[in-house]
Amino acid sequence: MMRARLEWYDAAGVALAAAFAAWTVTCAVVRAGNPWPQVALLAAAVAAYVIGRTQGGRRPVFVPSAVVVSILVGTVASGPAALSGGPLAPPLGYANANGALYTLGVASACAVAILANKEPVRLGTGVLAVVFVGLAISTWSKTAAILAVGVLAVGVAAGRLGRWVVVIAPLIVLATFAVTVVLGLNHGSLPSLLEELSARRTALWRDAMEIIASEPLFGAGPGMLAQTSPTALADADARWAHSAYLQAGAETGVIGAMLLGLLLLWVFGALFRSRQDMRLIVIGTAAVTAFAVHAAIDYVARFPAVVIVAALLAGLAGSRVPMPAETGRR
View 1 (tube, rainbow, N blue to C red):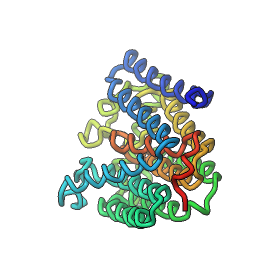
View 2 (cartoon, rainbow, N blue to C red):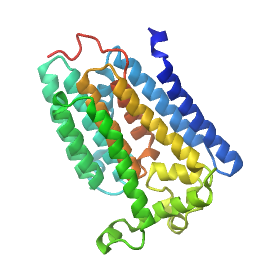
View 3 (cartoon, one colour):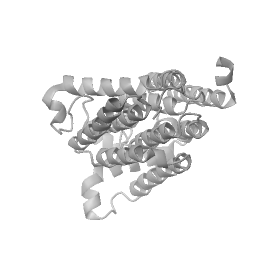
View 4 (cartoon, rainbow, N blue to C red):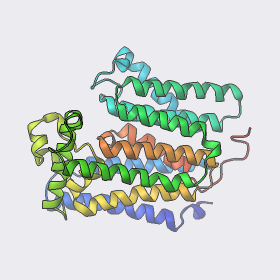
């Protein structure tokens, strides 16, 4: 069984992750910066993906159940402040990251509802999915609220959706990234309302693209956007580009951004090739898409909890070993 899992597609994924880590270190050596936080986060994501993938062929309900419990415990332990809607609210200390985590909680609860054998568990986790939508809305993150509602809708309709969802998903992420590029290039000439709502964000996108244009090969170095972007230099709270892909390009050049994009595309490919229950594949695709879209317009990918949960769900839904027959029976 182990030999079957180490197939060519998995080897390609390992090679992409290793290449991205190696290139990040190379950029730090050639340019400047500290590559190790990024390398450590990548390693944690890979480990989480492997755990999700392994459990997907053994006890698939374990992963989403653990995610649901962990998010609930973290939220309750944070106390009333978690529901304050403040920009620095717990449990992650950033409202938009909280929203991204709750959106993944929606997907996890939907997955448990599908995998559970007992009707009370299905109903209970269905209610929890709605609760997580409410928590996402309570963060006042418009993106998180929209994505959470979207993931819930996909979860409800998962039984009627097919593998074509996996084909459309990367196109949605690509379209979102294209919007960030267009808005960044047109910073300063946007309609007044849009400019007022996202002036700092579009300025950071513009700065990131200017860094890419001036340092296309190695970028400014890992973690160096904060010391290179004029917008970030003027605002200590703007040390991230609010886009994982533009951040990668600004700090590790075009090659780094391409490797990150290929890694994401590899994940979608693994979902397409998965032998899991189709409903679980659909929900996993919704979770990965929500994370990737949010990461395109905010710096939620800088939070290990969000990245690890997304990787766990991606691995679970991307398993090449069909889940046990007794799991998920209706």
